[in-house]
Structures are given as structure tokens and as C-alpha cells.
Amino acid sequence: MEKIELLISIVDQIRIAFERIALDNDITGMEYIKNFPKGCCYDSSCTLGRILLDKGYETELITACYYESSEDPEIPVDNQVSHNWLEYERNVIIDLTIDQFKNSTGEIVTVDSSWHYTTFHIIDREDANTYLSQMENNYKLMELYRRIAQAISEN
Image (cartoon, rainbow, N blue to C red; front, side):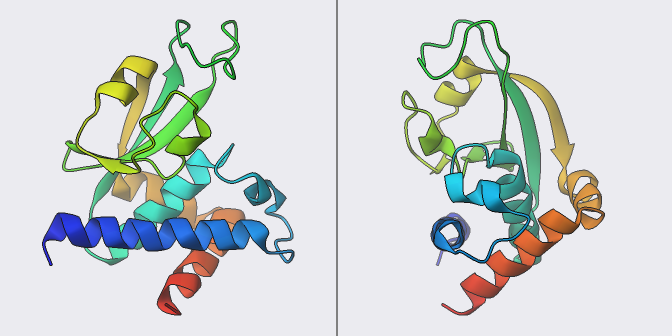
């Protein structure tokens, strides 16, 4: 299987695991996951990035904010809201929570960056070592990672 096809397969498994955990009643301390994908972009991107790194894919965590001209009615014009996604080899966008936006392409893995780069203003780009070292000190993220990794290993 080609490296990108394998990447897509892994991401699909992780997306399914997030959806299952969102339905789980035993998510003490992670109740926000019940709203997945809404409001889960940072935690899901970090978790996904850690699992992808475990499998040999080094990604960058992108932090961005909405342009004020966004046409999505869910985004207040006077309120800048952040969003996160991963990029692999600077040309593959992996956005596990893209479908929280009504005007998005809906493609979780894509090489077409036009929607992301016209909708958002990039604030920061962190390599895997940087964002994953911050994750190590966050109990909530480590527990989420543990649960997602366990869920995909059971498949």
C-alpha cells in the first residue's frame, strides 16, 4: 500500500475511534468530546499527530484563525476563532474536524489547500517534536491519546 493510502487508512480509523469515544458515557474530564468534531480540533490534531508519528509520519500542527470575511454563518464576524489541523510534507492537509464547518470541502485528507488557506490566517506552524512535547505534560491529551490508540489497535 502506498504511503499516502496508508496515511488515509490510519486517519479514517482514528476518525471512527473519535466518533465512538464521543458516544461513550465514560469520558470523565473529556466531556467536550461529546460534541466531536465541534471544538475538538486542537486535541484531535495533537492525538492524531502522536499516532501518526508512532507510525512513521511526521506532521506539523497548524494553528490558524478565521478571516473576518468568512461566509460561514456559524462564525461571528467580530470574533476570531482558532482552528488546528496537521500538514504532512507541507502538501497534505489532515483536518480531522473539517466537517464542523458547513462551507468546507469535507475532505479530511487532501492536497487541495485552497479552502484552508482562503478561510484561515495561519498563526503558527509547529513541528511534531514541539507540539508533542507539550502534549506529554497534559494529562487530558495523554488520556485521549491512550484511548484512541487502544481503540484503533482493537480493529
